[in-house]
Length: 110
Image 1: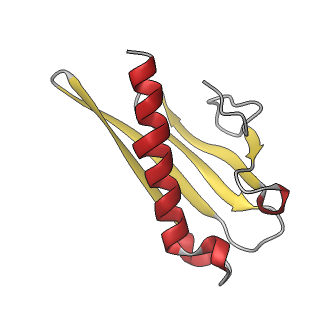
Image 2: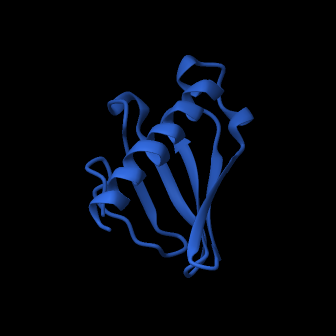
């Protein structure tokens, strides 16, 4: 599945991709930085035209008949003191993406 904001994505280290979720003013620029097939995907996360960069890592862990997803985002303190980069906004975004969008996708495809 490719999100409407994400035109193209390839799980290849060095692959560059962009997306926006808040209008053109906050265009996100990312580069895949790590890939361990079936286990880990990491990418940089920066906002075009603003200082700062973070890394987002997705880790899959399988136990018995269950798989858990762990998301780690580091480097948030490197972003400008701006309302768009407040911790609460990132927390809301991840809650929305993982708690609603991913849940809906999994339910539709099960």
